[in-house]
Length: 301
Image 1 (cartoon, rainbow, N blue to C red):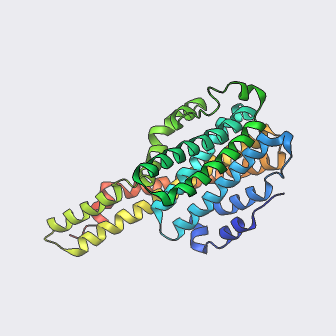
Image 2 (image 1 turned 90 degrees about the vertical axis):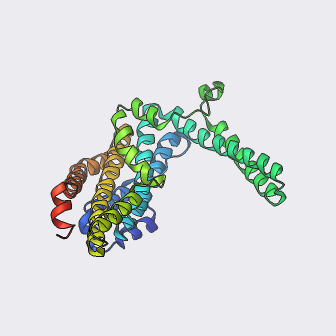
Image 3 (image 1 turned 90 degrees about the horizontal axis):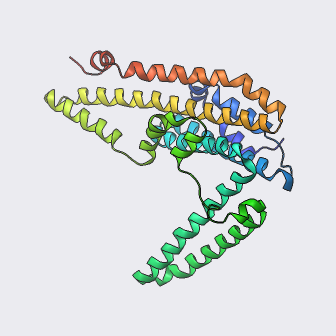
C-alpha cells in the first residue's frame, strides 16, 4: 500500500500526553495512510484523485494534532477547517466522480489564473516592473496545467464549456450532500479562527475588565485567562475529533464506492471511537462554559 513516511513519522513524534488526549486519532490516521490504495492508472483517474484528497486531509490532520500538542489551538482549528472542506469535497465529488474531479481541478487553476491576471494588470498600473516577469511566468505555468487537465477531462465536460470552471460554494456543496446544518454551526466556528476574528481578543478584553472591577487584582485576570485557555483547548480538541470523524467517514464512502474492502473494514472498526472522543471533548468544553465553572474556579473571592 502507498504511504508517505514523513506523515507517519510526524504522527509518531507526538508526545505521550498528546497521544493520550487525542487518542485514537493519531493511530487511526497512520492506519488509514497505510491502507490507501496504490495508484491505478488512467482508468482510475477519479479514484486516484479522491485518494490524494484523503491523503492531503490526513496530512492536515497530523498538522492539527501537532499544533494542538504545542498549545497552538487557533492554528489547530484552522487546519481542521481545511480537513472539513476536503471531506466535503470528497463527498460531493463522489456523487459524480468522473465529472466533478476534473471540475474541481479546473475551477482551482482557472481561479488562480484569474487572480494572476489581475495581479499582472495591477502591477503594470503601479509601475512594479520587477513583478511583471515573475507573474507572467506563473501565468504560463498555470496555462500549461489548464491545457493538461482539459485534455484529460471527459468529452461531455469539455463540450459544456460554460460551466466547466464553476465550483459551488461550501454552502451549496453541504446542501448537495445533505449536511446543510454544518454550515452555520461547525463550519462557521472553524472559519472564525481562520479569518482571525476577534474572539480570543475579546476574551483578553473581558479579563482586563474583570481585573479592573476587582481593583486591578492581576490574579483575577490571570485566573480568567487560564479558564479561557483551558476552554479553547477543549474546543480545539473537539474540532480535531470532528474533522477526523468527517474525513474518516468520507474515506469509508470512498472505499465502498471503489470496492476497497480492507479500507472499509478499517473505517468501520474506528469510526465509533473517534465519535466518542468528540463527545468527550465537547462535554468537557460545555462544562467549562457553565457559569459555575467561571465563578467558582476562576475568579478569586
